[in-house]
Amino acid sequence: MSTAAISIEGLSKAYRIGHQLEKTETVGEALMGAITAPLKRFKRMSAHDHANEEETFWALKNVTFDIKAGEVFGIVGRNGAGKSTMLKVLSRITEPTSGRAILRGRVASLLEVGTGFHRELTGRENIFLNGAILGMKKAEIIRKFDQIVAFSEVEKFLDTPVKHYSSGMYVRLAFAVAAHLEPEILIVDEVLAVGDAEFQKKCLGKMQEVASGDGRTVLFVSHNMGAVRRLCHSAVYMQNGQVVNLGPADQIVDQYLNQALPDGMEIALSERPRNKGLTKTITGFAAKPADGYESITPGSSVIFEVAYDAPETIRNATVNILIDSDRSERLLGFNTRWENGPITLKAGRNIVRCRTDDLLLAPGRYTVDLVIWSGDKRVDAVEKAAIFDVKYADYYGTGEMPQPAQTRILRRSRWEF
Picture 1 (cartoon, rainbow, N blue to C red):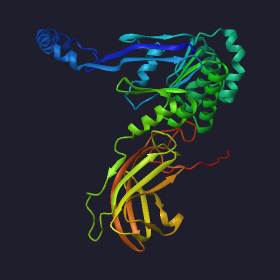
Picture 2 (picture 1 turned 180 degrees about the horizontal axis):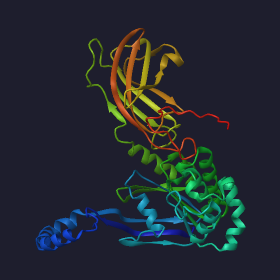
Picture 3 (picture 1 turned 60 degrees about the vertical axis):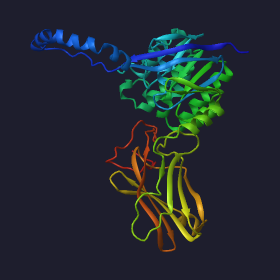
Picture 4 (picture 1 turned 90 degrees about the vertical axis):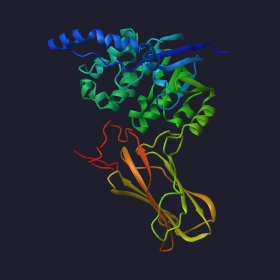
């Protein structure tokens, strides 16, 4: 049985919320404060018990589990589940309220882009600075320097201050330093979402190499369930600061995806009003990220589902999914006739699914119109049937994304200059 690299025992973290930060006072405000202080003190005392109860937020509550040495271990859960708080406690950034976490070995953490970097220093200087922060000797950094630079792919900008780096360059260099300076425990948060797809693949490969080849432990937090499934041996599913389940990564990811579909993705449409002459055939719609992802992001695979209930078979049918911006600009259309010709929709309750493997929409909010045709006759149509969000991801691998006013449709291209 492997020795535990990380032992977490009854770990809890409470925050007091609702207090306003004190601001600098003028002389007049200070005098007025002194006059009104007794009254304010009386009010605070009378509400003291209720305030204590209402202002305590438990980000973690009695969390207990072990992570074996040499294991790639995943933490999954929706925003607010306690994942980031857990990593901050394990990285010694914040102290737990109760319980303890024992880490056996040197720890390197990647919690956010550029952590441990000095903006005014060059990439070269930051490699040495970050290495020293991680507890490395200068000779050790020098020995690994060329490998770090080659992996990060920022050699041309090595003597440029990192304040001029894109977020993608930042994360490439930060990951390269942390992964090559041989910590016994590597803690990686969702920073890999900043890198382009090729670099993410490279990072995942390096983490596998670190764990399997060198026997080091990797703790990995990501919203990319496909990456968790491929990379991790075991995982924990967290919700509201507590452990829901702990076990093999495949099992935990399946449980999480089944229980944690994004709010508002499933839309019931049978009771929505229709224009005269239309039948209420369309009953539901869903937009779901494919391939194990939790969120829809630029360039990702997406499955659109149109549920219908037809009293009889609809022949020579067409199903339209039309996507508009939040300003009602028509952007995309998916149409069964364009790609399959006329289809037949069976009588009764059924679902038509449309999958696109490269949704070229910039981050933002979009609305969906749905139409079913039989030949040239509209059977049913629902305007503004649903809303879905495209979350940020570094589609171009530069850390830059267009603003909604600039463009909503993304395209990759080649520039010469």
